[in-house]
Length: 239
Image 1 (cartoon, rainbow, N blue to C red):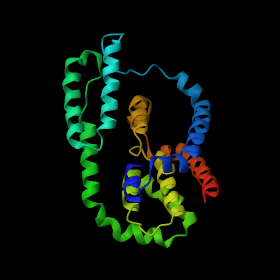
Image 2 (spheres, rainbow, N blue to C red):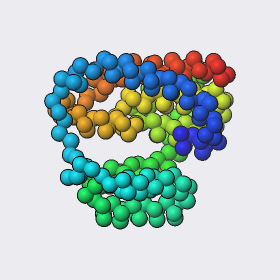
Image 3 (cartoon, rainbow, N blue to C red):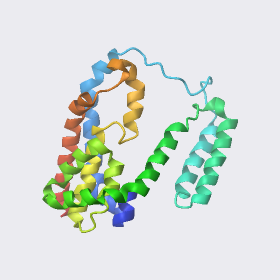
Image 4 (cartoon, helix red, strand yellow):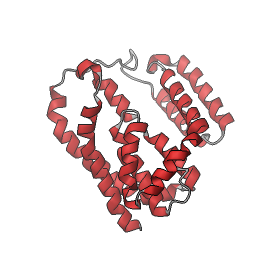
């Protein structure tokens, strides 16, 4: 969303109008049916061994309030790097002082994400030679499934950045591109934060502690198809 808003000048209102209604309906519906489908299986699992946040059962309310203030400060300072980094380092010091009330801070994963985004910014332009002709060569109607398929192999942030090079896209084509990126996010582990979190929680129950690509594709495809259908139907209302 941040990438698209920057390159296509979309506002918060644009996102709410174009994507919020089908996304909200899809999340509620899919969560209900998937939850109903796997409920018995989840209840039959042994308790997952999760490292608790601390040895204390109760976290002081002041710690919770300060954490919320840090989150709010991060949102406010997100476009001001100096203040953003200052707040972040202040949080690191605060986390160190109150570590008995927190999970162990693991900076490896966000560091890798930062390196990935830096590489995307630096090298994305080298991929313009194939992504633009590909998007231009297909009818507008097929942009959504095309982006969903590409997302399942590349990751949706990558596809969002590459799709920005398609400067001649109409408003409907931009909508379908974004809808495809969103719809295909569940087809790969790395696309959305809840995907790796769920895998880490349940990895002990997977063969060889890993989820195969074909298993993920099998169970994620219905959700992707449902979301894609909702976005298609909403496009008729918008355009």
